[in-house]
Image 1 (cartoon, rainbow, N blue to C red):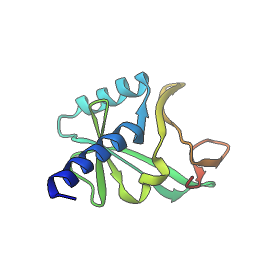
Image 2 (image 1 turned 90 degrees about the horizontal axis):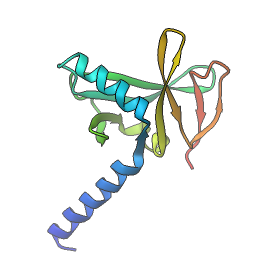
Image 3 (image 1 turned 45 degrees about the vertical axis):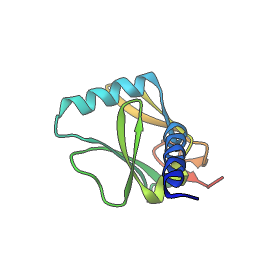
Image 4 (image 1 turned 90 degrees about the vertical axis):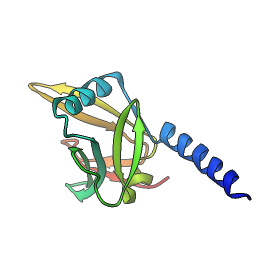
Length: 129
């Protein structure tokens, strides 16, 4: 395969991955847009998973002012996500929503890889499908 054809193929794969990696609800788009506009130093959001909590993993979703190491860039609805490379397969296909609970606005993930969640909903058990 010629170099130019590989480049085009990689761009197509990247486009499809960006489109299917993460979906955002309208509430999520509004909330994240506000967070990023609040501080002009923010360049996007760091998204990943860390081993923690009673079920095994907790989501990381933090605004960042510099590119985190070992991350891959995804652009979803004009919002830039820097995703930990080790978390990509376990986050793929997720939907990010936001819910208001009392005075708090909280991120809520609908993730097809979740097999169990703790009672408080802050940590999840995940399995690649």
